[in-house]
Image 1 (cartoon, rainbow, N blue to C red):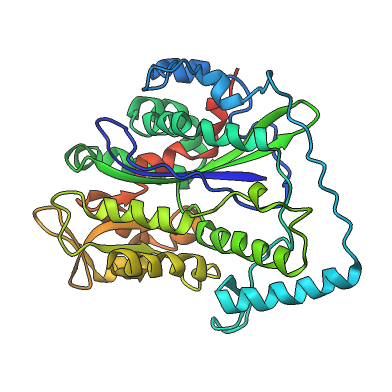
Image 2: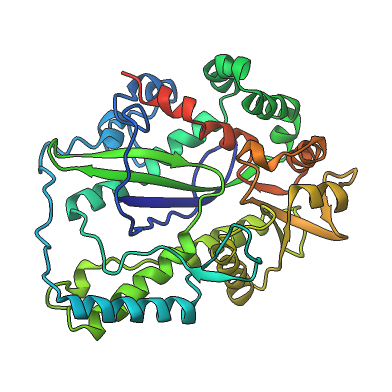
Length: 389
């Protein structure tokens, strides 16, 4: 599995990105539903937005860019079957657990255990091989794929048409669409948004294609922990003397943490969003994956001196307000950027106060990551429509 994360602040009027960061993520393959992602032709939707060529003028038909047929160079499985003795594996596993504990690759245990009970995040002991050609293709299409998502997010008519049947049967999507319709005026006035999107790909070796499993436009996670895991792999490979089998040149650098924080800092610098540069991170109560989030908080402070305030939607309803000029305040602090790591599941809305909090945030002048349009653009129904022949 390969994921690329593209981040950028952009005015809704132009849809142009200021920063793009491909993010290789080491994951085991998962089963993909045949209708997920950009498997088929996206030409009908792409042509709607005039994306037959990239903005630079370089010929780049979107159908080929997103489906990544790889006709010129067939994708083949890398020959990387390294025979490692069982004792060496056991030693590496112990080293990995210690490294994760020392470096903060951690998650909450969950269940009925106290919130401060931690365990290492699930990681692969060694890097998982992924064809270089496939990796380069996924990186190459990141910009055009995300421009397409941006165009979809700003096309009210398309979202309304595509999701109308879903709204009839799914109350959650209906409430999101209601917020989208109710805040169109504010979206036009406060015309900046921040996108942190994660595109997940799978190399389909028999067909020689790279298939997109799905895209995530809200609460895209594990960027920071994946940065650390790539460092852990280098550490373990060197300790075990395996660099001859795993050459360092074949291990792409992963700077996702720094790039994500830099994009968020750029969003905080948007004019008229407050000089303080405070970030409001909307989180789930009892979040198991808090360390992935808190590494981002740490980078925001260390590199940019930006403070992050964590709050659930219920806490936003209690302590948040939008003033007459549209400015968003939380606990008497002006907020420049709202970063959603919650709000993407019905479980995050236990009652009306959570929905009121989401409406409050969407009506504010603060930059949203993502705004409600981007949230809707990432729904499975929209992804299915983008994949239709």
